[in-house]
Length: 429
Image 1: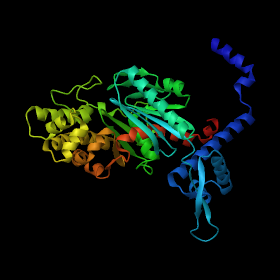
Image 2 (image 1 turned 30 degrees about the vertical axis):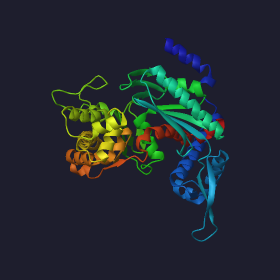
Image 3 (image 1 turned 45 degrees about the horizontal axis):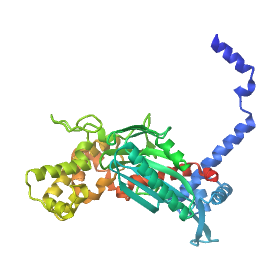
Image 4 (image 1 turned 120 degrees about the vertical axis):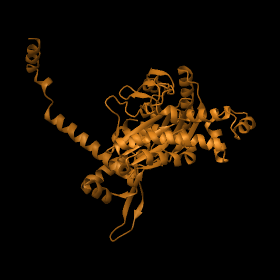
């Protein structure tokens, strides 16, 4: 009865039930215009320099439409003319490219034991940056990030560079709609409203994303996967996370939490190593940077011959990944053996992903990539050993061109990708 009354009341109010046709048509036209602007902008971003005629051919839009869209993108200062193409008969064609100086973008990477803030141009070139060691305590880390972010804002003002937005990459699961860090096992943080606190502090549009997902977007926009539609980005550091770029889009799963591959229980020995997530036998406990330090420490505890103790004494420094790499670079057998064991564990986990998803490539990034030359042979060997032959032979394992900065550039890419999808928002900056 209540439901019937509700329907009757709506019938008596026709303006609630319908949207005037002229408004609907206008909205549809505006949406189509935005989609076409995005299409042209992304084409120029991916393949510049391009002429208007080339854009028309590649997008399927007619020449007059392309000319109109190009004029609007130039008015928004997102693209610019960059010389002429005189190849072939006829009048030379004016070429177009992205205007990298349209504005600055702030990128923040929240690590387990460090924080990093960068100011970049629209194409991800770093103009200013600072890294700092971090205390995992919530309030201390956020205050440290606020301080560095304000320094970056000051730097943008000195450069007379308007800011277009702020991206933040964090370990753990993220609620994209709320911009909230739900749970970061290695930080022991729960339900942190990162978007809210940084938007209030800066007045900028803020994007928050898992670090591996952000890095996967960076590879698609700026890196080695610009022409790839199926690849997996693997972030390896204190933890291991994955960004799944499938069928040309980032796959996030039902709640946006896809990619927590480091917490897959791949080890089956009776005594399994505990993980910060609360489980045992997780992949990342055997293949992250701490596992390498633990392997080396175990060797030193039984008095294996190594130059590492001498390096520690000489530098008055604790055992760390950079120090172990230094020893490996010098040919230290124990350092090399530890990297090889971690590489085998990393490759074993990668083979599961490869068999399951059959990607075109695996891209490795994050802090652990500083040791890549010492780990890649064992990674490749493990992938070959554990993958089905017909799948393993067709996948390449490559290093991110951003190395340890993959997620930092990924934070920047979040803002750029949003502007690429909605170019007219630039008018509202």
